[in-house]
Image (tube, rainbow, N blue to C red; front, side, top):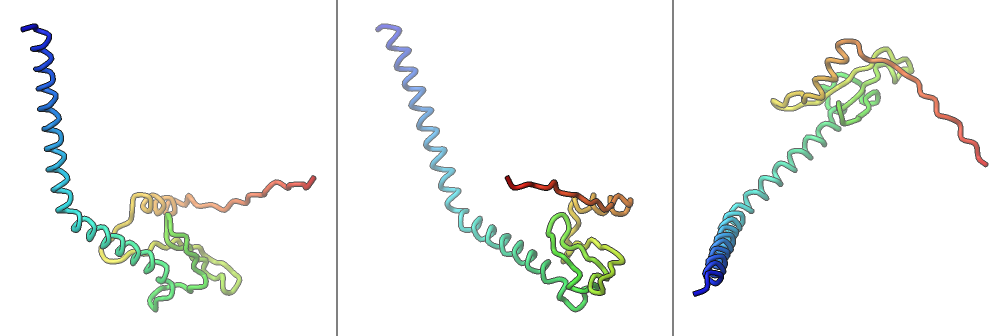
Length: 138
C-alpha cells in the first residue's frame, strides 16, 4: 500500500477523533451551563435589585429624619460621592461645603472615595472660575 494513503488515513482518523472530542466536550459544557442557568439568572436579578435599592436609598437619604443637613441644600451627584451639601444656602449665605457619601450596612468606601476623602483632608480643594469664550454669530 502507498505510504501516502496510510498517512492520509491516519491524519483523517486523528482529525475525526479531535472533532468528536471537541463536540463531546461542547455538549458536556452546554449541559452543565443549562443546569446552572436558572441559578445564575436568580443571582443576577438579586444583585440588580440590590443595586437599584441602594441607588434609590441614596437619593432618598436627605429626606430621612436623621439626615443632618437640609435636603434643599443637598445636591445629588452620585459619583464619586453621593451628595455635596452647601450649608447655609437656604439663607443665601454658604458657610461650608460638605461631601457626603451614603453607605448602608457594612459597606465600605471604594478606593476612589478614599482618595477623594484624602484630598479633602489634605486641603486639596479649591474654587475655580471658568469663563467661556464668546461666540459671535456671523
